[in-house]
Amino acid sequence: MIITSCGNSIILAKRIAKKLNCKFSPLTLSTFPDGDIYLKYNTNLTNKKVVIVCSFQPHPDMALFDIVFAAETAKDLGAKKVILAAPYLGYMRQDKRFHPGECVSSKVMAKLLNNSVDKLITIDPHLHRYKSLKDIFTIPAVKLTANNLIADYVRKHFKNEVVIGPDWESYQWAENIAKQIHVDATVLKKKRFTSRQVKVKMVLPVPIKGKEVIIVDDIISTGHTVAEAAKQARKMGAHSITAIGVHGLFVEEAIGKLNRAGVNRVVTTNCIEHPTNKIDVATLIVDELVKEKR
Ligand code: R5P
Image (cartoon, rainbow, N blue to C red; front, side):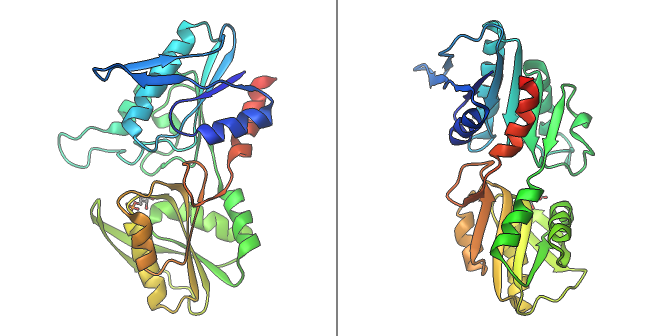
């Protein structure tokens, strides 16, 4: 088995290779003067299982394109199986045509991957209107979750806590984590006006005053969703506020926005590399890949 990576997730790819006792072989990736992609493997792939570890952030368009080129090239060079381990799978939020004429980009992304990779492994994909990855993937697609790792982190670092899911989509994570650590959880009702404007309201009140509030979301992108939830928790007398995101995209000064909203600490998994990474998902992927080594 050979582990490689496109531009994103190189640190994680190396950790996975080390834990699996496999070779990590980086790709040479660059562009020709006109912008065309240049990609080269630097190891023999004949009859090997090739694992491309690559999250779709930053630059999701480039990541998708690199993955397709890398997967097709691996097959062309004689690889017997190409596995994509994309800890963060992009494009999943556009899971329907919200306005006439829009691209349902999740389906297009899936179609490209169905054609070029043999198996997908991902962590906490944004499944909202889709019930499962099977709704769009025809290849084996494995959904892992960082819930247990997040619950362990919370158990070790907090006391007298309460868990908030800032919208219904995030409640699946918040509820599961709260159950594991035996604390209250609640969900906020979110109304999204635009990509950058949301409002939240608490519909299932739980005691917040004096509590260590943990806001859990699958994705923190612009930070608006978590910031609105934090403002609400502050008004209700929270002692401290921690935002935990499985996938920290942090676009457009998101961290500053979170701090201004009263968030004391931001914690993420290393599904996407970022200085807030505190929760390591390497073992989740390793446990799945071990099955491929048998
Ligand atoms: C959406 O349903 C997700 O679960 C997140 O709440 C959302 O993607 C966060 O986006 P933002 O940080 O831009 O508010």
